[in-house]
Amino acid sequence: MESKFHITKTNHSRINETDFENLKFGTVFSDHMFEADFKDGEWSKGVIRPLENLSFHPAMVALHYGQSIFEGMKAFKNVDGEPVLFRPELHAQRLNKSAARLCMPDFPEQEFVEALKALVDVDRKWISDVEGASLYIRPFMFASESFLGVRAATEYKLLIFTMPVNKYYDHPVSLIAEEKYVRAAEGGVGEAKASGNYAASLLPAKLAKEKGFDQALWLDGKEFKYIQEVGTMNIFFVIDGVVVTPATDGAILKGITRKSLIEICKDMDISVEERKISIDELIEAGKDGKIDEVFGAGTAAVVSHVNRMKLRDYEINFEIKEDGISKKLKKQLTNIRTGKVEDKFNWVVPVPSAILV
Ligand code: COI
Image (tube, protein in one colour):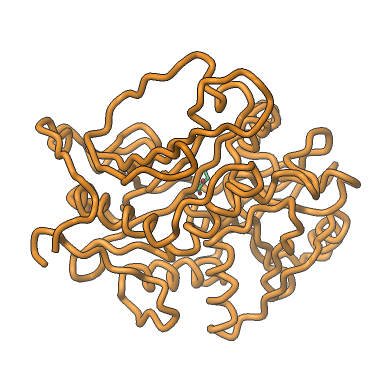
């Protein structure tokens, strides 16, 4: 089967220079990218071509007014050595939700999934056999028009590139509740995967590091009372044997790993609740010895264990339990993705090979 996209392959693959055992997240890129442009009210036919630098006009709208969104997803190698995507249609839908919030055009969902399949197929050799390895996929859309005025742009670019990755966090994570800055408020753009959300998180993240913590734990923007997320991942607590995660409220990213873990909990008969969780409830539960585990969930982070948390003046440490719920959930998620257990949810989408089919 021929790809529906025009594909230009690189003559200079970097794959043989790549040390797959030692990948620093975000620094090593595979060979190709997908590109489509929106102009005069429609998207161009997408192409796949060698990954390279882009040139742009200094007045490009995305640089000035932040009309820029992205997705983060992964391709895995299954037990038969074939690449698969995980819930790509949900990423297509979320990209378009983010686009709508930032007044950007929809990208056809079917076309998006086909672009992912074609791109992953072309760079399928970049998914290594290292334990836990995957191909991180970064689709993003930005206003590419050269125009200096505050209105929605009329021209956009959608690019997708990929990176071979191993673990995002190579150690358990420590968190400090942020009591001065906010990541997002209801009615804002917190639910969108807007680039600016991540820019706004950098200073508090730097301050958290200076205090000896890996990441800020965000509280709501109104009362600084309710737990939101971590920014690089959604947050889960196991309180008295029940898995609890903040209900999405318009200011919290609707994580696809988050959603999948909730669904896995229900399937495995693990009690799970999506609801408001206040910092006071957590402090009290911590003091009563009722917080069994804390973990983050995200595409990059997968399931990342939290071993220390500072909530106002209260600090709590956690042992990572080998037989804990978070390890069970991580294992089940990984096994579904790689085909080690039955994918009864139909989450896994094979990437057909244009060469073999
Ligand atoms: C992801 O998990 O894919 C994200 O976009 C988070 C980012 C901090 C890597």
